[in-house]
Image (cartoon, rainbow over all chains, first blue to last red):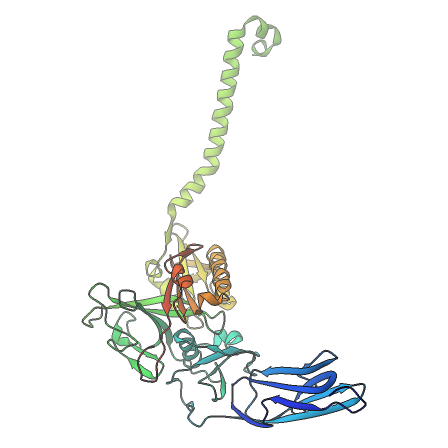
Length: 272
Length: 198
């Protein structure tokens, strides 16, 4: 192999198969090699701007896409040197799983596994996905169901995905303006120590009446004491349920809250 | 008097001269003390009429109702209120108020009170210093931090922090104070395929 006067030839290394598919949101690394030293440039679809260009005089290029939009794509590698140009490409099908939840109404009634930041104005996420836990799931639920408009400048740049293979959603693609609060449920005497974040909807009346709140998180739209998300206290310590009004959302996975009501659940499930 | 202050008698009667100096010093001290009292007294009187409250429910009822009304636009916290019973003024120190809300509560007449809200700069500064430190820790993979929340309100200096996994590094942080804020570490709980916590 080597120089000569023949134009460079590009070979697909990883994946070797030119026809591949991934669920939406999945990362994919592409590696190609060239039989001569050349400048190797990676393109996506018909975009004339390359997604990556190597230095001159290399024989291998790798590039990882964080993900691509749903649909059929072409990833093309072009080699160029003094002998001419050569290219090769992959057909990359980015598909969506069929078992993703369909959104309807103000409540998200399933566990959301991933979140990331991105363009403002719900124009699309960018960067790698982070794992979402209870806190981010609570912020997502507040953003959709609650009075989150004052925080649109942040929330319209936040995106979630139920799981790899499901489509991406902006936190505030719809806002329902319900009276939603975020709640910390804590008991350090339980084994293991219990600390959880859920949401609560204020139903009206006195805020210090437990029955005037409905708690929800993940797939449970009505969490009650005794549920794994709101365990009874132990004999040594009651479970604290601290309800907080959101007063700021500095980023996609954080909130500042003003405590408005606190309830204690004893080891028999009594609430005070 | 001129003789008293004259150089000749000073030289001739050192005891009298010393006495005059002491009298002069006493007069100066009395004058200064009177002056200070003259200026300080009104301030002290004003302070006596002021009361600092930390809980919103300790504010006059009509002020609480006004705050509830302002809160319809956006949540915020009152960290303290300074009530001047004599002049019927209330200054509210707040965190999280929008500019619109702050403008709405500028020398606003509410019942028999005049209410003004101001950002609690000191509280906000401490909070942001703490947040910056926590976000720095968030970048450390050994901390395994998934996210955190900060409580805001009178005397509220609690941070709840969720971690993906417990590590010696994040467990060492549990219960510690950062710039006066107490950190509580919790292992994040998410559903497992069997429906229980994981």
